[in-house]
Image (cartoon, rainbow, N blue to C red; front, side, top):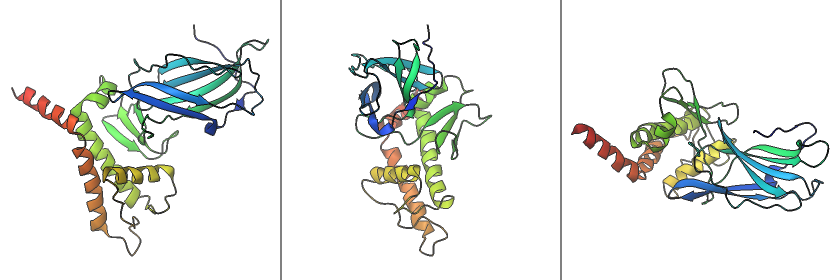
Length: 262
């Protein structure tokens, strides 16, 4: 039976008091580790703590003990969830002892985890009906300013988008090119002081892909120092290096072509 909570009168848990790390096994998300600090919030020590992870219709709940005795469960497995690349978490502190059983005393929602190597996903994915398009980049999402929409009308698309080498090699290089082009020619970002967080994340991503090489110093086409040829070369190089790093998918792609040709 699904637990019912009363959300009236709840407090807000500061996000900086929570740290959630995704653990990986064989390059796949297997579980998570959470650090919770509720000191100074005046919460009763007997109040229960729950961590819930979710993505669209997928959902799991974990019992983390009480405020006075935070006790992570022995099993925080996320195996069985179809798409772990866009999981979000919420923390609930619940009164289960008083006459207001199920009353939410404090919570925080929409938490994004980091991976076991300290990086977080910079491309949230949403599966939705986008007509006859297979994918599109939404630069004005309601929850995230940058979202990759993938058409949920395509059979088994959540699995395909994650594991099919043809999808990965056809779609993601084009997505990267569109995002970097948008950063330059639409948002005209100042690389030394990007205004939006996702701009900085993608410039950092390009630097990692290019082994420390910075983006062009000017990414504003209206600036007199803007060099379009250099900028286009930089975008192409990021896409090329990304593809070079996907050797596993490339071999899988070639294998599928050979199989279909036989």
